Image (cartoon, rainbow, N blue to C red; front, side):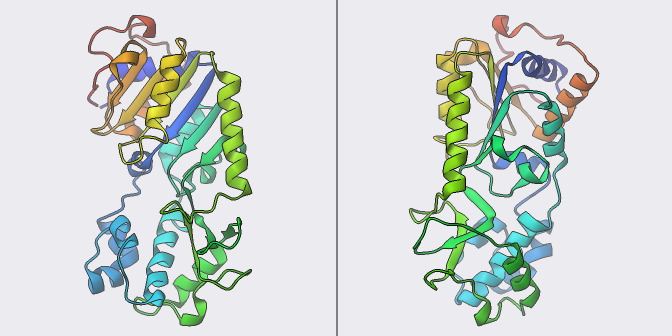
Length: 305
């Protein structure tokens, strides 16, 4: 059950914002049902689970498979599950509806392409940590990335047991070295022209909206990489006295005391909260909570759903 006061206050903040900056982490996709373990992992990766005792996509991604054929066998299954055969999470579609007609930008550490699959404007997205749908040279010999859908689907279809055929190991078209996924794991991560253009658009958006009534909306962001979304959002909200900071996360929703009176912090399921806010906005309802500038003690704090 959504806390109605929390949902009303967030809906009011969305309505009143001149600009909205979304910061999306892994918790958003988890709320969409894209779990990294359990039945979903077993459905796609049972051969590797049985052979090597790996039980979730995250840990399996770091497992030292004994051959490159098995490495790519696993990764082709993982990318199929998390990029090409996952569908669109309903929470993403509802979030897009909430942002309809608003001046917004999305910064995300997620690599599952859900924002684009849901129809968000590509020019308003910055995937800072990469994308499951891209390969790069593992060296790297160039600052290029390559769409991988055709190769991934072919590898997955050709997998026997846990391995792909050796001649299907993806190789760089320029130098012949083995490819890797364009995911930020170390200093070989390629920031191609698309990445740099998105970074510029994000920076320009922040500069253009500085000093306005900006809603910094953090969704499912934990403390694994707080320097990308969490800390910058706190800092920008602190400097801009007209800004509102909002955070929704299960068990990890927090705002520092410096911006407490201009914060909406909701400890709960993101999908439920976004659905509640969507309903309020679609009905044209007005907030029944206290004005953001006069937040009562405890309203900023964790709001159970």
